[in-house]
Image (cartoon, rainbow, N blue to C red; front, top):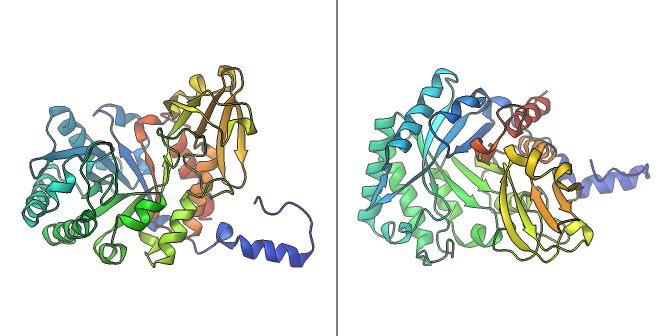
Length: 373
């Protein structure tokens, strides 16, 4: 581990270990209760290319509101969900989850969920769709209750208790036969202001922690978009979120850590500190399956690993470009962290961005098996 750098005295080693004991925690999850969850927004044929046997859950992304109801409103999306359900023939333990929203996909969530009638009609529509598709649960991806999210979308402070009421109505409507989860922002403002954690957690199966986009496309300063740990330059990280939620007694075994199967890239970044924590202009989103052509040594990048944040990044000196991403090294570190901390699992956005084989899902599977030995 990164903090064992010298052959120091045993006392110093002990003190260093104590300060970093969370990075070596062994209150581990076992493979049998460790979830590997893929969001999926691809079509109904592409998913056959992936090793769904290595997943416990796949989340169809996304359904949207039509009036007060959850709507799957085109033939392509319906075909995709039907296809996902048939994957249970390959993996009988696989759970297929429907989702609401996504970034830009919850324009009417605040007004609809502000009334008891709206929450009830939505919950009934969820039950009907789950029964129709023979799916296993609902994931709420409202970005974000009670704080500003997608530009122009309505939000208000009352969203916070209304979100609690929504989850309660869903649980009352669905009973215990279906899973209920939600996608949580991985940054402090969401964690502190969007959710009544003590009230919702007894009603939920999982929280899918979006510990990515922590430096987003709106940022004019580079950084790690999906770091495992905080650094002296960047507080927001997966571990920062887990520490906070643990401090307010959110059950760790219901928390799912998030990983990114894509890079974020900035232009006009000065060649200082290999581009890290420098001014820049957001350029693009690069799927992992295209790293070998768009984000490679051949394309001008050199690569670096931040051993404090457990995060990989790249810099292209010829083009003054910076990229931040998960790779097999950081993904395996996240998986091991999640298992050693006793978290409920790991999830990622999203499956169609991966290589068909030898990609990041394989890295997760490999790390989980190694950690459980």
